[in-house]
Length: 396
Image 1 (cartoon, rainbow, N blue to C red):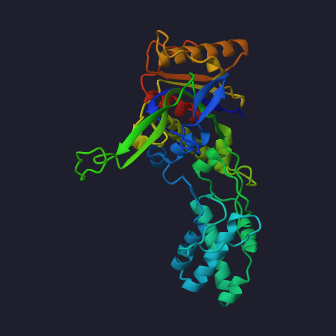
Image 2 (tube, rainbow, N blue to C red):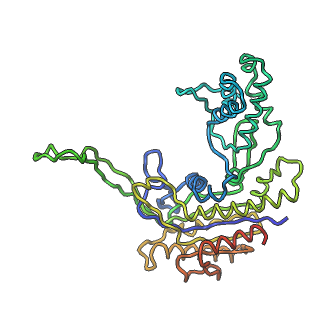
Image 3 (cartoon, rainbow, N blue to C red):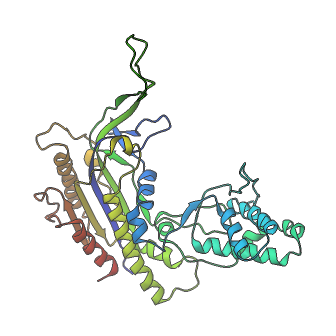
């Protein structure tokens, strides 16, 4: 069976911003090619896509929730099922043990709510199955004391024995790792690189003050001053972004092929249709959505200047990051965006020729219509590009 690897390369120039900051509040950075570069972490990029309205609306009904609140979801399930309040309280505590392999139950927080030991990616099916398992245990217990004697680890095993459950698109794309027998570990079908600037950067500081609107300025030096002063570190950078999606891995995750004894042709067909929609939603969100860091202060909402997609029939990914090992000169005649595009084009065409890199389909969307890569002209619009991509994934 033919495999399909979709690789996405983007250039995106942001105005002054602090899109992704470290523990000190400074914009994240990295040294690459011997020069300091602006950086946006892969975790930040994935979360901005996963939590975006675009991805959420297009994948509605196919998404999971990342949370530690499984116990409270189980409590709600039990109460709706007619389990009394005291038994539901025990059930919530039992569910708190699902966040660790030992099944250790957690203590309630100050508000009286239970949380699991770790944050988990949960589908609606996960919550329902665990709720049903704990509900059954509550009903088989003659009283609260009997229910309390059932170990959370035993309940985990009961949930595991129910078999594979329907998989959500976001878990199928981004993967899941949990230390609990009740859930399946899922290998991600996508890979995201940290975005780095195509040029070297220096951070700057925005000095600011806060002044009381109602305080009347005094005539002397002691009055009329600022009530607060501070600064925010920021930079401005053109980022190279790279990620890939292994379509067969995505389809297999959606069908549960690795965990089911058999997968029907209808399952495969439905999963491929969902995968095509997921790929489209992911790439559209990657193009239109920005990380949320300090956006109220900087509003750095700039769209990509170039999107280059290569679809390969072998799962052999190739990043063109080394196009920018020598930093782009922002003062070059063509400007930062144009010079970055030229360097990306050169790297892509050189590696394609030298290493015989094959692709069954290539798609380009460039702000500058004069830009071509490997003789591929720019699509008319993002919609045109995505329509072509979705058709390839579906096999149309």
